[in-house]
Length: 340
Image (cartoon, rainbow, N blue to C red; front, side):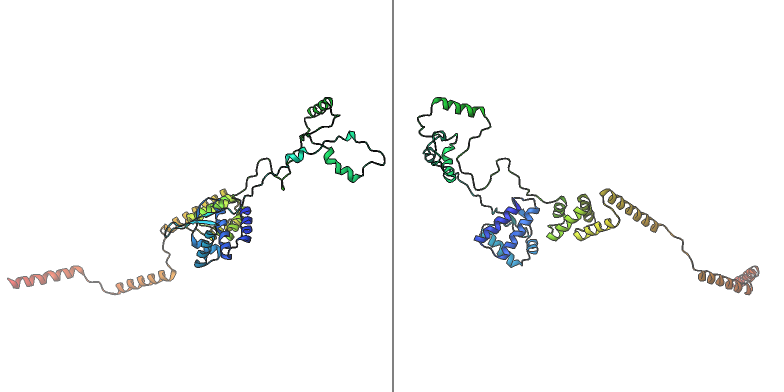
């Protein structure tokens, strides 16, 4: 399906069978989506996505889709609840059949052959330029035209000379009396229509992120042209690994690479590996135990407390442990004797 030819045929058809503005907008969006899909015969797309791209509300969208179906512009196949409908675009081009209009053979054979050599003109009877031109079609008889009657002076010798003259010149082409068509037809190989303009980056985005809007599609093509398509694809893959399936996140990755002068996939992979190594080293450093650093005032306070405790213990008189032991034994012996 040729995109430009279909659009021209669609608008030409609208001149004779007009559509509403919402139906025209919806048809244009469906053609755009079909182009992104690689001109598949049938394709699916969510109704909410079509409404957003065409700028239509739910009720207006349904009415426009029904109008396109009734006027034979699209075919819609419902697939049940919670499933996107299946669409099929109907070609708007009309094939015109041209009939070959050939000159009747009777008119050709009625042309009387009159050799120029038999005509003699005197000075007064010589024809004017206009009259001479009027006799030209009859005088210049074509090889493939066979006159019905020949003059008496034509003999076999002249016929042989004419035949030999044509045979000796193979480059002489016979002229067909069939009128030429109104427009030139290419007799060679027909030029194939370039129906697929989707790049790998746009196709990857469509399969993994969703159908892009015309703005996002233009932005993808711009980044692909400025950097390279493999680099844009690599950025999309990194975004999917981070569970960030948005073009905004992909664009942020590309902008960071531009600031770091990264223009190849190998350079991006090397920068990513260096960043991961740095993160790994930082995590290991945090997991190692660290010695607690005490402030100076805390150390001085502890030293003063220890000094005061030592002074207090020195001022208190120490008891004689041996003397206390003897007194305890005497007391026990005394109470033991009274008990007996």
